[in-house]
Image (tube, rainbow, N blue to C red; front, side):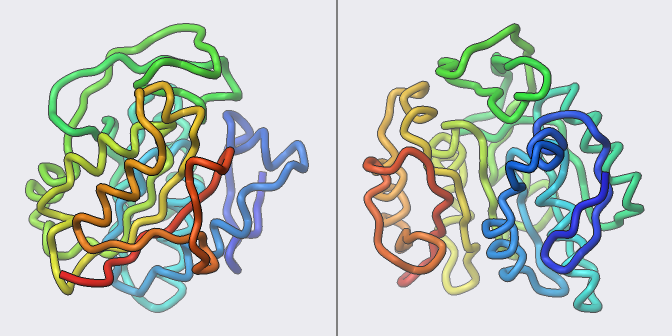
Length: 244
């Protein structure tokens, strides 16, 4: 399967959520991908959290290469089956600069139970209460953003965090204190806001906005408009730091 994304041609193995959405004609988050790709520079360091089969990671790496650079993209995906698709898609595209990590990101290291949805809906796997149903579970390793970046000696260099992790976004950000405290070299954050998924963790999306505000971030829609994340069924939002 071939997709045209952000001016790039990408090849995807025809299995999993990403392939199904593209094949069915339902779209593949084209506007969101275009926006996120616009934030990528030739030498960007990027965390793609909830990488799934690699559509965003491949787009980020391809965009950096198209600009004549060599970006570093950490593709973080905890589910073993989906992680295999990620590795296949990286190989299909011969893409360098992507570092696949089979783990989840949360507020503390250890292990966690990942609730799995049925094949083709692996994008709905979650560490929280499975509000969209579950057909099984898998124990997965867990790390924090800060610990991953410290290990890679990139704590001072990450430019972009994209997170789509079915409600675990708040926990992930709680594990990124050192990363979010940076000024002025701070990451832009593009993340999924989903009240239904957030309920699986017992919080409301506005709690993410309040947490980020404590670090000097302002959260908006992708076009820069203010938003009430509790009032939206689903949105991809962007957070930029406005003060130290």
